[in-house]
Image (tube, rainbow, N blue to C red; front, side):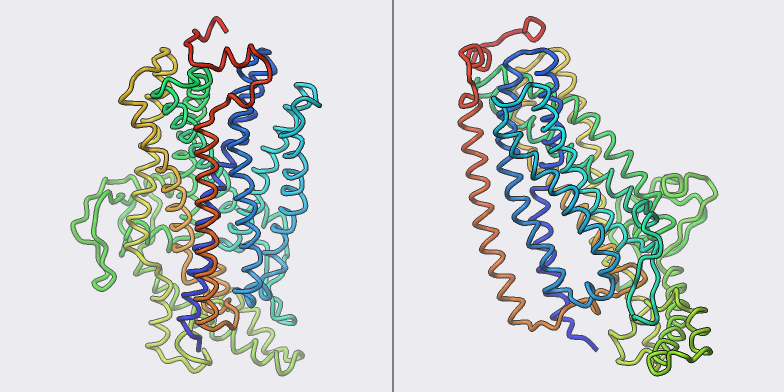
Length: 525
């Protein structure tokens, strides 16, 4: 039996840390490659204005990068301090991608970031462009390895439970690396980062245009952000569809929950655009559906079936009953490793061992669970359906909104209309929206996996450390105060850099002239 207050506070602390860290990650991912685009134009054209543009956005990238690193380090320590049994049980698998991220991607990024900032007058144009590219590559490789680790938590392939060591171990690292859930999450998350950076650059550029400041820099930045943002917003929606397809085979309960689909529907299933899910009644009231869409998205066919929550709970109940057999075999093997009957029993039921662990929330020994407790454990596999339902719709709605927004921005940049003040004001006001969509995406991914820390392998409530409620509240308050202070510092630094503009980066009189307040037609420059 476990103290659920400790579990929920441990989850809250890690969630706050992760969500705070993810305020910086999307902007870092997107800005890094946009710097590559801007500097590539500078190298190809030799126009000093593009050097000014690149250096200005690089400064904002640097401020954001530092805070992202500082907050990310805390998360890695929390696996040991707050989730010690999780680290012990799956550390051989989960730790490998994180170690590779640190040794390969982070060191690559950290090595070249200094050259990128301080090498402008010491490296040739092409050499400096190479350092900028390596920073962007390192940033995105960091995201890859972290999402490989997270993807394995969602879909634990390439691993097995070792009844001798009583831990999970890697059996096929390539399966872990090329996990379909991890790959879908990576491309979707990175594309969301590109949208975030595009909205940010477009918003700041629009503010300059409204104020009549740094017009030449703003117009070029606006143009790059509009084109890059349009491609990124389209890819987010397309790759989000691919993520939905990955859920069909690998995370059926998450898919059913975000659609509030309580019962399996005849294929192809419809998608709900509105509804009020009820956990108590296990129904969705006032539901409005578009026929066939969910079936087409999730199965790529007219005949593929999308399982409902009730049917998935019934399957979970069977797996719990089988898992009890595996648990019984493990307990026997702890006493006698040579018990061949127990080993044979374990091999038959080992894939369901994690489901038996769900019973530990209700009874100390799963083998003594009553039928009612088994049913209760089976229903515990259903995440918070109302939260899943609405978080997904807000996130998806924002995704389609950004496509329309960037279509307009691309049109205005193509026809050289940088004076549509209503659009410029709108661009400034919507700057926070991609962060909201990104945070909602993480909420959807992590709540949708509950009650599992590792899907089907380790329940969340068994992964926590032996901490007290007082200890957890102390650290939560401490982190909140620290991160709140860092957030104020970061916002003040970013706003100060934006107000100051790109003037400090102009090394030549021609730079200052071209980056100033005057309007110069793009083709002539």
